[in-house]
Length: 226
Length: 362
Image (cartoon, rainbow over all chains, first blue to last red):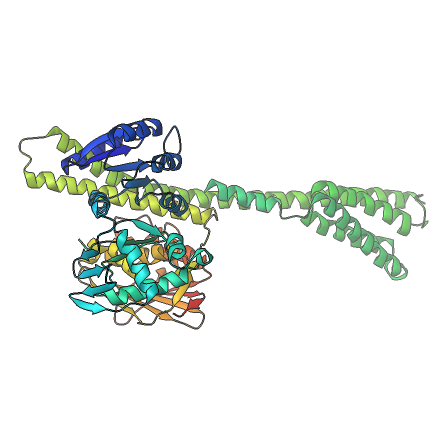
């Protein structure tokens, strides 16, 4: 049974998450402060941590940083307001995903499933398969319904980066930096154009993307189209 | 609300120039008028000059504070005595008649200055009071609508959850499910009202910072239709965007909210099964977004008012606090754009949003 650690100071949210997650088959431990959260994380080595950014004793950002010094499993951030700066900051410092309160339970469970799944997908499998889409990393070929689709080098690099981080929100600046280099940070138009090109090639309907999902003002997330 | 009122009073009280400036201006007025009168003193005569100076004083009294007006009154009396009252060029006053005239001038100058000031003050108080009353009426209306709009979902949540906690054996599983879905609906509705109020207060306080970046409009439209998936199920949605739309320089979050509010209104206030159409076009200055429906349209007299804060059509029933369209207008205007509402023939409403902005063609 997968174990999830919830770090949130609001008792109502902790109760809600405990009931929701337990009824979905997860084992849940919850803590109200950053310090207790860090201790429990070290003792239990949970499979996933849900971390609230507004904690009473220290900021969620600092808890996240301390966790990421040794903790490699997914961390899902809960944030109370749509504060993109906070969200981007936490994603850039190693959070896998975020949810804004109030969130729908279905959404929360989907994010958890996706984060846990991508974590089990080994880094060096040569074959990545999502529904009709198959990427052969060794042969550098991409097929959709067994038909080969051609990509430019940059398009391919972007697709691989997204697909390898399935379920994880990758921020605009992270993607720009990884694919184009530091000089391109902030040049969102490049990214938008390339994402549109990728969607045209891999999505059934580029206007209704099923693989590359936009996280407005934050970045993109690759989903398996479950 | 109170903030606005205070700002208003503050504005009225401070419409006049600063104190120093008032002294300077009133001195200049008296001096200037006296100089002109002096040049024409051969034609006017001392009584005429007195009247001209009194008129000048009244004018000063209309605009300035009491102290500068009194100083101007004294100054004008001295000038009149020295330069015009015979014997001229000294402060001596010849005969008794002139002495009476000077004292009378002095009294009239003071009284007229003070009176004009007082009249103005009364007028201002009356105006502020009127404004306050209007604000109070609006405030009452808003409070009524707000408390209703908040209490209804809260009542639903409390009632339904009490019912579930009591765990009556007569409660069938489907009743249970209904109660739960009522709680969920009410909470979502509450959340939306809170979001609207927050958006509005951000607009009101002027802290809306427009953060523009390159936006893919098709993607934005898709995001909004996903958010409204449940509501849109009962409608016929048509999205009409050109294939080669450029990227537009916009604040994604704000424009997303604009489209969200327009679509949500359409799903709320047009009969189920109506068709809703979204189209995006490139215009010379920038982006044109159009949302149309084939519902009942808007009554003629309300076309402008619907964009006012807390304005609701009488026909609109429950489920809103009258902020949606004012937020639309506010967010569009924060992009220096315009929003126009038209009725379509034969029926339906049409919102046309035009935003001047940069484009990026891939």
